[in-house]
Each structure stands twice: as structure tokens, then as C-alpha cells.
Amino acid sequence: MKAIKIIIVLFCGVFALPNIQAQVLEPNDGVYDKVHTETRRVVPYTSLREADVMWSRRIWRTVDLREKMNQFFYYPSEPTNGRENLITIIMNAILVDKTVAAYDAIYDDFKMKLTLSEVAAIGADTLQLSLYRDYPPYDQFDTTVIKQLDVTTIKKFKIKEDWVFDKQKSVMEARIIGICPVRERLDPQTGEFRGYSDMFWVYFPELRRVIANKEIYNRFNNVAQQITYDDVFMKRMFASYIHKEDNVYDRRIEDYMKNGLEALLESEDIKDKIRNFEHDLWEQ
Image (cartoon, rainbow, N blue to C red; front, side, top):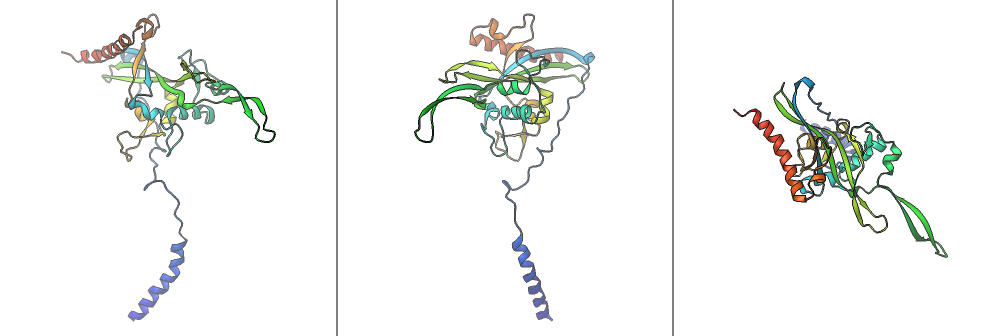
């Protein structure tokens, strides 16, 4: 009886062996499938009535991507391991997916919309080059080459936001209204630095639907904790300085504070005003 059981087990194993060998495992860059970020939905803002806004202040910030805390906005310069830098995500959303609109950088009221051709032309340079043909007699010829936007020239982002105190919920909160990429202007022939130029404004609530599914590198090296660009903005996980607040002259800090140190101190003073206002509300 025992011999019969052994024969049956061996018989079943022989037929099961080809099925085991036929199994093909698909390559997976990781020990588990990441599905949380791809399926995440945007958490909407809480409703805010005008009657509940007890105090409000509009400010404009500059996020310098060369600061260590902001490097995840700049890197990787090319899509790597499923990650993209912020300007690549924005340009793809505008030009490829057409889910986000771009507005003229001169105005930040989101009324003058740019066409796709106008956006594609921003940062593009026309180069006059002298090349040699790759076949005999290898003579020299002049040609015109269109150089597209170099994403590594995007070194800053401007942020327009409103700080409001909601008396209904008794909270002070900041809501980002728009984002503007700022690129370096370089001489196309010599590469000489010629200053900075605003590209366009993007309405942030519209952009949130895109960046909520775009993962960034966790600078605390906890790969299991997936953080998106939307988390970074909503949780204020970036470094910045204020370059303008709403004022009767509609001028920037650098327009009346020519010294760099004085401009930085003025920026910190504006931060203190906002912080002190909230603090004084609860002061006995």
C-alpha cells in the first residue's frame, strides 16, 4: 500500500514538473508593486467663505532649486527610476497630456492663456552652426538648428500664495495659487549668463491633479514612505524666501531694498508679521 502511494506521488510530480518550468516571472524593479501613488486622489481644500476670512495677506515666494532642501525639484535631470523633476512634469502636462494650461508670465491673474506653440517656443534657441558632411568630399556647410528648452536651466520657481485666517475654524493656513518656473538666460553661442526670465504661470489647484501621482525622492531615505510633489507643497517641505508682498505700489522687495542683506531681512520681517499676527490672536 505504501509503495502504491509513493508511485502516485512520483507520477503526479512528473506531470507537474513541466508546468513549474513553464512559469515565467515578469521583471519587477522592487520586491513589491507600488500602486499607492499611482491611484492617489487629490485631497480637496476645505470650503472657505468670504465672511469667514478675518485676515488675509498675499505674498510671492522664490524657491531656489540650488538649495539642498529643494534638490528633489531639480533632480533627476532626466526621468530615472520612475521619478521626474518638476519642470519635466509641468511641460508634459501642458504640451503632451494637455491637462494643464499655461498663462502669460507678465500677468499672474491667470487670464491671458498661452497657446501650445507659444509654450513650446519658450527657452528654444536658434543656432547657426557650421558642420561637415559625413560623406566625401566632407565639405563644410552652414545650417540652422533649433535647440529646445534645456530643463537644467530651470533654477528657480516663483510661488504666489494667500495666507488667510479662517475664524470659523480658527486656523491660519496658506493656499498656493500659482507656480512660475524661472530659467537662466544663456547666450546660445557662448553660454554666457544673461540673467533670469519667467516662463509662464500655472494654476496650482489644476496642477495638483497631476503632481499628486508623481513620486519624489524621500530625502530621509525611507523608500517605503512614498512622498509626492503634492505632499511637498501641502506640507511646506521646501525652503524659500519672500520676494514680494501685496502693497499699494505693487513693487518687489528688491525695488526698494537694493542691498541683498537688507532685502533678506525685509523678507524675514514679512514672515515675522504673519507669525506674530497668529500668535497675538491667542495672547491673553
